[in-house]
Image (tube, rainbow, N blue to C red):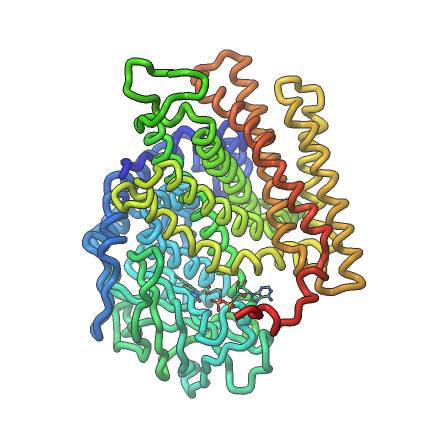
Length: 601
Ligand SMILES: Cc1cc2nc3c(=O)[nH]c(=O)nc-3n(C[C@H](O)[C@H](O)[C@H](O)COP(=O)(O)OP(=O)(O)OC[C@H]3O[C@@H](n4cnc5c(N)ncnc54)[C@H](O)[C@@H]3O)c2cc1C
């Protein structure tokens, strides 16, 4: 297993040199404290914690997994102690409101720390990750009293949080959920039902767990319009800031699963548990969207994390492993064979991984800037624009980054050959851990419908136009930039095609409703490839400028330019296949009767 090294140089490149984070923070009221010095110090400290504490527990967590007993769930050796160190370091409070005990630093900085934690040990990082979403929901929708009681201990890390949506008969289709909440005379509710697949639902890392639960009131309308949101703590409070009685919520069992073994995936039984309504009755799903958007970007980070882990493992191995000779003749004649990095196919795999890891990093930190603007800008128009951009980019980031993260993790195994399949090197764990990212927080199929249906067609393409305008402006400004002309021209063409393609799908959907579902995943992947092309072109622009100015780090900038060229020539042509698949339309998918799928047995 290679040692994890936090990719701070690349994070600084993306944040400071490409996206100009120092100016971004200075332009937003409440973010001025995040000076380059302070951000640098926090990233260094975070990197140290992730490299020294979390990364060594990654394989331990996978091997040991969590264990269930009627008393509760025991996390793998070292997880609890690492969490205590995390709390001691003040990390849970980093990007939360000072009014509730937080440090008030920008959300985008919290995301950078989440990136490092996710790369070092995704399964561990999910415990604080879910708390973060619970905190954001309470911050946005909780009453002042609920915030005092539940948000503050979450901010200090004393308690953790969960997100309880899924039930055995409903995952995607939450309109079918059955968990009930009966109003009580004292204003509380009795919550009853079973939730499954609840990440971090039970564990031994914190003294209390705050479940954020979707349930139905007795008179609620059917479907999604009848869902409300509740706080259900594991332990009730004693009214004086301490823990009170054990609540009627318990973990019935944990799942045995493909990856993320260090994270407990729990069946949670609510047996008349005391709960408290958050936000308006029957508007729970709207409130939960706050949680889900945070969680979706959190899951996008998972895609990036697995690509980075694959990159670190495979690029080291490819330089050390000696097999065969280069086709053009020995490159290391004094060695018994050349290192596998001389082979074009190994380079294809490494560059694919690298182009995803670094390209997706740029997409993530661009999306994170929109979060900051939404939360801090005093300009209503800027907030509205950021909201639309973020709404548009979230399904792309969630689905495209996790699909490509999985592809990268898989290529990580391939670069190692048979040794990739063996546990020792960590590459097979990386694949297993990454697979869930395309499923939870809305599958790729569901994100694709959200993008094409809700975000693009239902708004007559408004957020798409906002983003394509950003790309158009870039292409126009760089039309004479010879250093990147080979990138700007195809980007401009794709940017135009994006709008035309959308229009065609919209027209088709007017006569055949299935056209949207038939095109959606191809449309999302197409959108992801074009979005990343923009970020690669912009990163190449900066790299070319730095090289022309003779600034240090020549090899770093040259590698950026090189990877951008690779992305445009070897990855971006995949858009052609997606366009052709979209053009094929829905009939070829829908004409086969459902019963005929299993013919031939
Ligand atoms: C390890 C793990 C951790 C999890 N953590 C949590 C958690 O903390 N909290 C929580 O509430 N849930 C959690 N989940 C649940 C997860 O979010 C769901 O599994 C996911 O939303 C998919 O729901 P489902 O499994 O019921 O699949 P289904 O909804 O049954 O979907 C099955 C397939 O049908 C497709 N499909 C469904 N509807 C449509 C449609 N309209 N159009 C096109 N395709 C469609 C899906 O894309 C998928 O491919 C977790 C799951 C796992 C495995």
